[in-house]
Image (cartoon, rainbow, N blue to C red; front, side):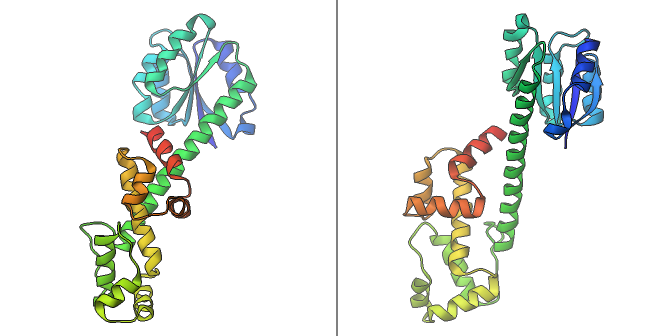
Length: 261
């Protein structure tokens, strides 16, 4: 359930926004109301809303000033409402990250549409945050942090992990390592799975995808370049593996990460 705060100085408009929309149908609840920007700042701090619906022209403190003083700190999404004559003025909110505007009088289907867009964005942001947390968990779990090289106590497994960390951009198979250490590929696979909980290929792909994510975050390379840099010579296979571990395509990941910033 998303928490909504209404900031509007006109009593009729404010009460109408509070009680006329079918908030439950869009998975929302109105947690409070404010009569101007200053009041809005206090209510934002008090209620910690997910969505703030705010008028532009208000006494004491207008809507844009309120947004400038709170939207980044409290991380809510805003819907600006304004009269026709104020609409271009309201577009200044773009620099603050506001993407939804509604003209007075409020058209409720358009309000619901704006709410759903924000919910979709917030859900995506949550997924990205969860993905980032999970990636950090995987890095620690798999010993992928550069300063936290994992030692298993088995010299062959340790060699396999070290080889992955050092040579992941290259073509790499268990057979290559088996020739290097004089042990069978089957034996090494069993030892690796027992020590790490992952097959060699699964560990290798996870490590490569983590490196791909790091490169995607830098936003300096094209996706096909990142695929090759991470050790995937087959671009289509890279997309398939990326979706498997991250849950979305690399392009979607970049867009969502940039939107979050």
